[in-house]
Image (cartoon, rainbow, N blue to C red; front, top):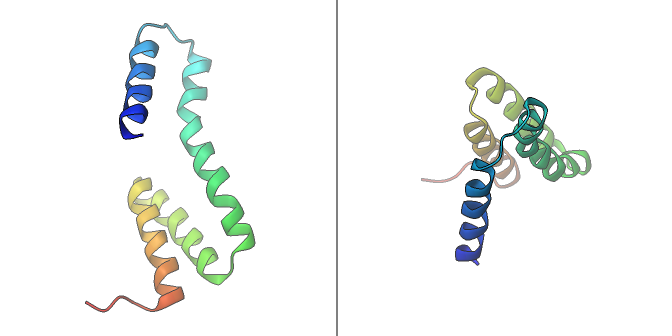
Length: 90
């Protein structure tokens, strides 16, 4: 499956490199990753409880301040885990 996934992505990138995109289509394609993340995360936030709500607030604030969505999401996951299970023991 990893090979198929890679081939699909690589083929798509190669094919899109051959097409001239309008500015509207470019903006639409740039918005898709964010829309997918929201579609996956929003139901968990709506049906979740205090751990998810706290993590959501932290993710939004950290993403806004740092500009790093990956860092913000990692911190959000750690917050949910820590609130549910207590801080990790090192």
